[in-house]
Amino acid sequence: MKSQPSDASPELTQASQWTRNFRNQNPGAPKGHCIKKSQLDAILGQPGCEGIRVYYGLDDAGNRKLVMVGIDADENDIISTTTTAALRTASSDVESADTASVSVATDFPPCPPCCSIENPLNS
Image 1 (spheres, rainbow, N blue to C red):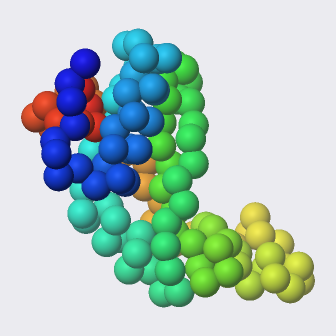
Image 2 (tube, rainbow, N blue to C red):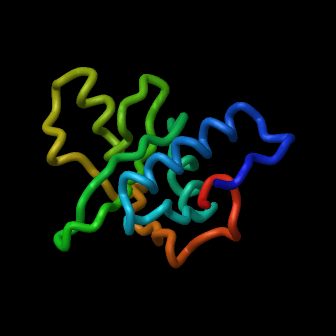
């Protein structure tokens, strides 16, 4: 087992343990995913977006996938331009909401092959 660098923060030490636990319990599973700045910017740049929520999913072949969506100040998903208001007031049909300007990201290449050099989080 590799030792942690002497300057490792408590957060890095804990994160390293958590990722090691996952790898040990899920051999062959992706270690993580690469997320591009442009994907984060597209989500965070939406009007009213205060953060990001990550959902876990499975594609039709059973592969694990991440789905990222913006959240508003009340921690509601921004899934359409009118959904948040509709959820608050329950006065409109959410399914008919306009989703043209909404950014939901789903294309995050897994590690491997999209991996960092060896470090405490992936080795």
